[in-house]
Image 1: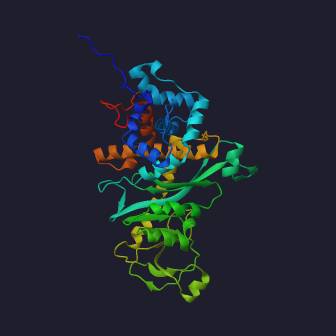
Image 2: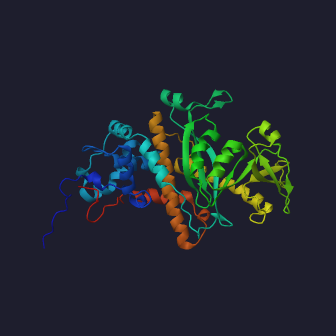
Image 3: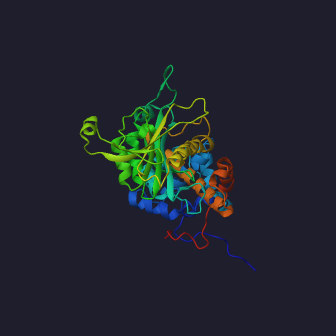
Length: 405
């Protein structure tokens, strides 16, 4: 019996069917289309690289950092070529790819990141909770970017032992969901922008029921007040020499105190915010500091005993592991972001963060299916699996993508 030759519906393009294969469930086409419409960056005419394909392409760049621009684009289109043949797809050149990325800009990627990248832990997710609190950590890091005049002007170079660093750097500050290593609310800036300034935008992603851990570099009255206003509870380290007057000693050895916006306000006891202070030492560790001091908004020691919070605070280092996944296992050790202009650097950064989120989302699903802590799974192995599965697995809906007209 003769069969009808497969063909596209009238008025559609092959690129209307391009998705992101194995990661399409985590970064769905519908969310991309909504963001493109909201930012006014959707394609208004027929193009070889329409806007939604460029979004997927920028995310794919993070998975194939060592491959050329055109080779990454072939990976995105490989499933389409397998279905309809090489003649159905035209692989744009380097100039066409650059123009398409420039048309898209970085704002849609940031908006997609901010809307899509949210905490994913469930009540049964191991390692994500402390006594009912959803544990988060705050910290920052840097990424090397291409050495161009525009990038140097926008981001600057860090100082080195002999002059300045070989590459300019972009600074990022994030929250991490400790149990899943998902990086949330990331803000970008020049390499020398203060982490406390970037943290102002990041802390807006805290909510009631969360417990935020942070290093002593973040502590300050204004940032503490902003973080506490979100409804989240805080456990932040502070400098051991900071003056905090003891108001009441508690049964677990911690004590109540208050922080103030200035020395003058402290002397007059104006605008104080109550805190609970926990001092502790680490015995038997050669390079340990003489005294560690953390402060918390949890004033009742029965809700969170001092010994437990002191043991919980080192979980802050989970964000360093997440940054290592981003910079070493996904981007690649000693690899430099390839984009030559500041706008495309920001676009590439958010593509990298979305790729990390997608991989971590799949790892979380796998961990839940076998009831293990997501930390027990290898991020590097997951990256290799996704790279292997991405090619040739474009998501082609049986009856066509509903957004196609």
